[in-house]
Amino acid sequence: MSQNINEKYEHDRAARKTFKLRIIYNKKGCIAAGHCVLSDPYDFTLDEEFKADLKESKEGEGAQKGVFFKDIETTEPHLVMNAARTCTPKVIAVMDLETGKRIA
Image 1: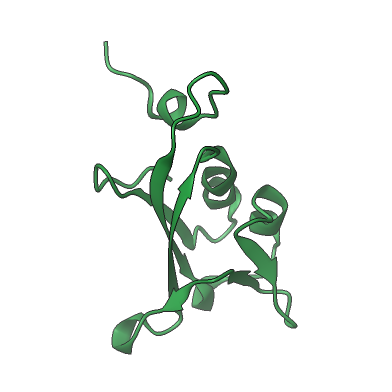
Image 2 (image 1 turned 30 degrees about the horizontal axis):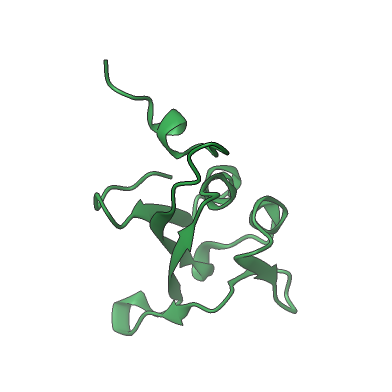
């Protein structure tokens, strides 16, 4: 029986596994709904135009200008996963760095 992806990455207090994740955020598509900040205030904040900023991230170059990247290690992956899931324009992606797969 395969494990449901949501079960695999949900917070498990007993395990306290550290997940290595990459957050990819396309600021150009942000509509300033603010759901990401409510879901994950550790990684997202709002700028002066009320668009989200990915804290301590690096901006891509060339064709990736306006796209921000951040690698994190966390025992609470559900925070950033909820930020990606609740993003109205779907401009946030979360990748599992160990498997290389997109998880949100």
